[in-house]
Amino acid sequence: MRTKLARRAAAAAALCLTLCSPAPARAAADPAPDSAVAAAGAELAARAAAVAGLDFRPCPAVEDLPDPVRCATLRVPLDYARPRGPQLSLTVSRATATGAGPAAGARESARQGSLVYNPGGPGASGMFFPLVAGLPEWRRVAAAYDLVGYAPRGVGRSGPLSCQDPAEYAAAPTQVPPAPSPQYKRERVAAAQAYARGCARRAGADLAYYTTLNNVRDLHVLRAALGDARLNFMGASYGTYLGAVYATLYPGHVRRMVFDSAVNPDPGRVWYRNNLDQARGFERRWADFRAWAARHHDAYGLGTTPRAVQASYERVRAAVARTPAGGVVGTGELHSAYLRTAYYDEVWPDRAAALAAFLRGDPGPLVRQAAPDPGSAAEGENTTAVYTAVLCNDAPWPADWETWDRDSTELARAAPFETWANAFLNLPCAYWPVSERQRPVAVGGRPAALPRTLVVAAERDGATPYPGALELQRRLGAGAALVTEEGAGTHGVVGGRNDCVDRHVERYLLTGDTRGRRITCAPHPEPAPVSLDDRAASARRALLPPVV
Image (cartoon, rainbow, N blue to C red; front, side, top):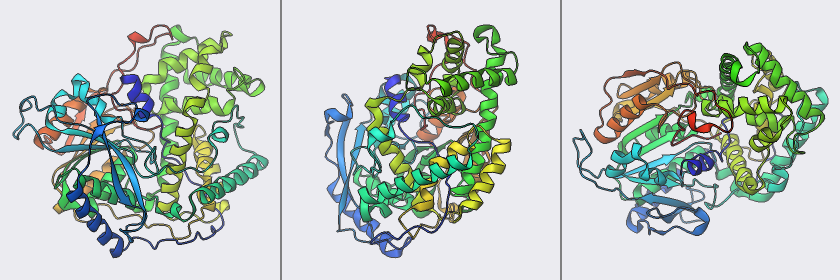
């Protein structure tokens, strides 16, 4: 089950940089930015959903969700300004509350409604979430809440969005230079233009409707269809931004909200500057991995200093640049695999052991960890398409390549590990075929109207750096509490990594009590240095790993 959770959650793309250039062509039937008409359409759709409800039945085989999880579909408007126009069917999953008596210390009845989860991305599916009901760490929460997951618009079977052939998406090996030459930049510009054209060709005018605002409206309709007057919500990574915008637009419909690994919601940082911050955060975490590997030189032989570990990595990189490992792992696949060290310290032992094995002449572990999985190509392509569409539609971007080239070149001097990969991932936004981008919502417009909320963050998180958690707490007002895992950097804190954090989250969900405004927890233990054949000794894996 834990493997399944990790596999499902790992399907989504990371929050990354965008690169912009000349003004994009206009798509047909572009919607205007957020309007009172769309807001009224969302209310109409929510009222209709409250009457219709959801018809939960055994899940289709394609969802791979066993009993007692049940599945349903939720109809939502593609365009909320036309609530009776074209509709999307969102997939929803649920494990009903076990109702095993009142939870310990709870001041309320055993059943407290639905708890809806979004794992982030954008582009990740939360359909797996009800499976945690069977884990001991979730026993009390599962007794009190129906655990509800869903696939947001465009994701999975929820009106799936696609921008390219999955086989093209998964083509390997790829060779990426350590520093991009002018020729390589031109190649990436051409690839980004082709990707944006593919999105427009495959989605047509519908492409403009994949936005955070529409994701929030969908969540509002889902809440109503579940029969809850107020929303209980847990979001990770991008899911925190989704939840924060919901809390801003619908404060009267909020009951409990947990924000795990918070995106900085400052409108001036969505999404361009957030991603500059991320590159610096990833550099810190890559340094943390190298320092850990150096401390365990006796186990891995990669070097006794972070610089020596970097040199070992560069030797592997040079080798796969000459001859791809297993014929499928080039420098692009290698880099992608080792970016995960900046997200999750639980992968550190496997990644260090793979480098060590390769340098001893055995490429097998590296191939197993870094090679693309053809079986998940369609899922990965879909995830990337939704991620790109939402971020490109959500906010205005710098309009010239020179600005981005200058910013990325300067940033890469201090943070070379992720900067250019992050930038090129989002380069299609420079040529996005939707002319009227959304304006980011000013999160926290009426914080006095919100009940207590809970922000959870790791102090050294690279993907969503810690200042974002402080900013979100500030914007949510005096009722927002912040639980900080000090000295740790794994992205996604809730759900099995840290008992102290989980106790605070459980108490809040069951009683509404946050035990103060600023709470600190000691870091979870670093992973043990284990070989690939001795994983059992490593630190336990999180139950709800957020997206990568």
